[in-house]
Image (cartoon, rainbow, N blue to C red):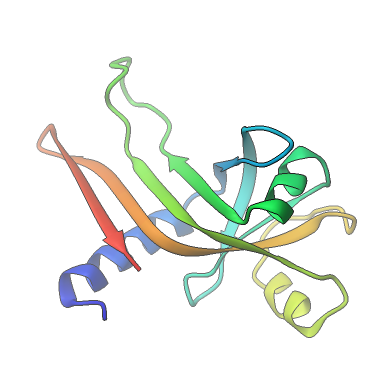
Length: 144
């Protein structure tokens, strides 16, 4: 059950993610450890989606659906310790083309993409939100 604080934190994360489009997806499997840049989009139910071509990332996802997605702001400082962003830990599923589910999700996609790309949904299990208030770092975790 999500309490009020967690609900507010979830809304904050959703708001942050809805204004981003570039993320880094970490996968692991027989293709090795991979961190790949991806373009993301959300639906109104906090579903996180991305497209990818085949290759190592997709090999890993099919073997091990547990992933980490990192979304960070462009840096406003050269200090290597200052980052703001959201880490999303969760499970991905492949959504097959030519299905009702695929078509319903594609309505939310704001960018053009090749029809050969695979649609992936990330179901969050945990989020870590890092930001700064009055130059003080805040790191807050949310279990879903």
